[in-house]
Length: 363
Image 1: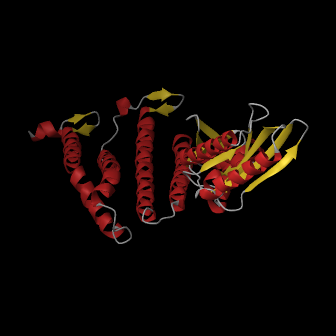
Image 2: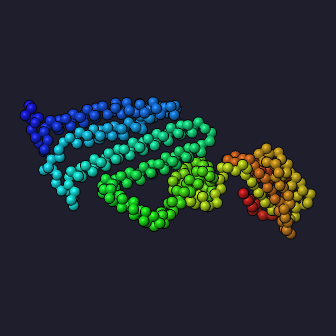
Image 3: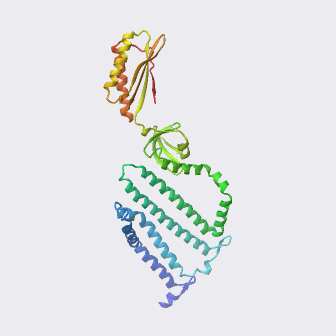
């Protein structure tokens, strides 16, 4: 038996392959328990800052990346004690041997595993902060959480890309790239001008707070609810239920109307009454419209009802009022009530419009 285990195959005794297989099998069996144990230790510390976070949520984020990390580390530590078979160390492509390619793949796998863990940690930190932010009435912090979560993830991806380049092509190429970036910084900044501007404008949006997620805004020809504020752009769900992506630079530089922040709506009506209307009837119409607006609790004080202008064939009545009703459905109901009331007043006084057209101006 000992002779069989000592037999050399591909440059290594058979017993070394058995040891490798046993170690990997053992780590595969205990990786879940080992990950849960490490996650529980970390959770005890995290719990001091986030008592509302459940252990299940914490473990769900970290268990899988930790399992792969432990398995990969165990494989790398064990295989390091094996000799790479000289007969398999063939040249793969352009001076790259099979051993070098496999070592590079292991380093890449380890880098991916570490990046995966860091990304999950960022997700957990954002979850932890969002739990605290949900307790506040002001939901502005929720925007910051999503924004900076994506921002730090982008930084991790950049460092991960640099690590990949270093593994694949060596530190010399990385140094050359960094030096090249230093020399060509002006050209790079010019090429990425719009992206940099949008990134800076995203910070301006979060610190200046002209709008928030959930607000209804109007920018240029687009009006809708803000669904997401990203690093480069803001996503708006329009009234037609389309999904519009607007660069953050445009959201900052353009004249933006935050409809959700208005306290009142202004309604302006222009009625063109027939020119043969008697002055007594016209005065009674003006007074009845004033009484109509005074009786309506949804109409704010300070409305205007007057004879605005007249021609040889038309008397122009101007009606301007403000309302605290902001939501569209109650607002349209109010408009319908006022319009029907004005029609009844005109009919009761026998007053006719000079034409069938009524011009309505809203601001």
